[in-house]
Image (cartoon, rainbow, N blue to C red):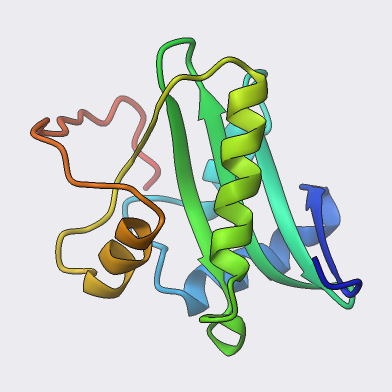
Length: 143
């Protein structure tokens, strides 16, 4: 890893920069309040929220977790000015190593079907579409 790059745990001082990063990367949806998503992640005892810093500036982030059966990855983001430089791959490797240390046997993640660039990114990392259908039910509305 270049000396000006560091992966650190989330700290509150990064909140505004991370939310701005998620907005820039198109990750925020009207039904998900990013501040509430961060607050919820901070209560997760089995996961982590990593921030990628370049020369002290936030250029990437990722949330990961483990429920005892499968690992998950959310909000993987790299600022567009730094994409295609291997930083997303670096963050995913960090998540995978973290989850392996917890004894996690497999990662599940979600990508919107029309997000072809992100689908290709994960395919290059060895991820593939599975025959499962994700189902969801909102229990607590954010809006």
